Image 1 (cartoon, rainbow, N blue to C red):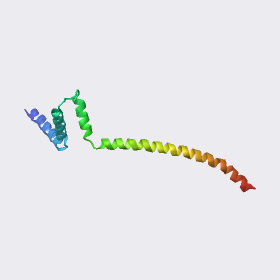
Image 2 (cartoon, rainbow, N blue to C red):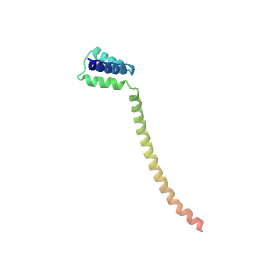
Image 3 (tube, one colour):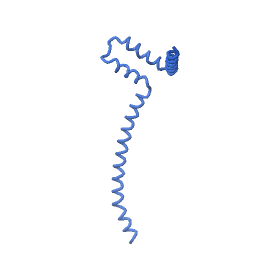
Length: 103
């Protein structure tokens, strides 16, 4: 009987932990959304994953950051290429300047 109460106590502690952290509330909201869905999805698990993932505010921000990163990479490559061309031009004129100074 004491073993039963110990297990029950641990379950109650875990339930309170889930409640305090908002897990129960979030899961309940997603389950209600699934229940109220007029056309049930083929995969309830995918529905849950989508709605739980959509709950995080980072997803749109991450996508924007990825787009910005791609733009910055393109600009970087263009600047590197321009830098190479300018260095090549500069190398053409530097020997001429050295010859003029020697005269």
